[in-house]
Image 1: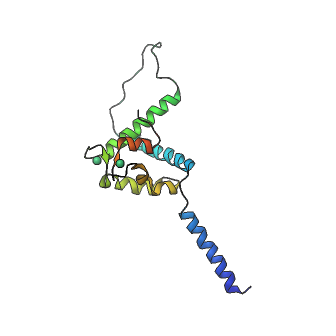
Image 2: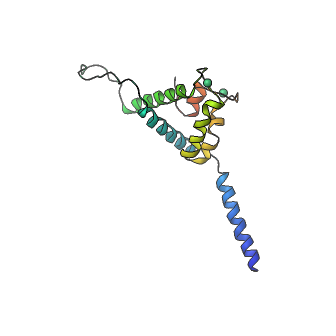
Amino acid sequence: MPILTLIYLSLSMFVSYFIFRTEKSCTGSDRSAFNSNLIVLFSEEYDRFPKPSPPSYRGAPRDLPIVSESDALLDTEEKRVIEWKFSELDTNKDNALRSPEIRDLRDLVKKLVRPKACAKDFLQYCDLNEDEGIERDEWSVCLGVDLH
Ligand SMILES: [Ca+2]
Ligand SMILES: [Ca+2]
């Protein structure tokens, strides 16, 4: 086989490998991994954000019903974090995230949150009714956390 053909073949394999890589789509399991990574990112931000210290429950009677299981607590924590993030992003308080409000988030997500395939179209994916704005419901649905 002529050497040029060999070079051509290996080059085209190389190129198609990259095309395949960049066009890799975001599967269901990618999406849930992406959502957990994103929520971790928001939680870290939420933890750093100055807020009034929570009321102390020290000394509360032991027989009070406690909000129960760790799953339920985790769930509540995620909801609180994504609600907080929504309000933080919605600077004009119209209950929808629109272009200037989410530009920084889009860049941040592309840079930091993996899998990349899901990061790429994250905000379009969230805008379920395609009105160029992300409402509170769309935000929670696309992050996989039901606020209701
Ligand atoms: Ca807004
Ligand atoms: Ca929308």
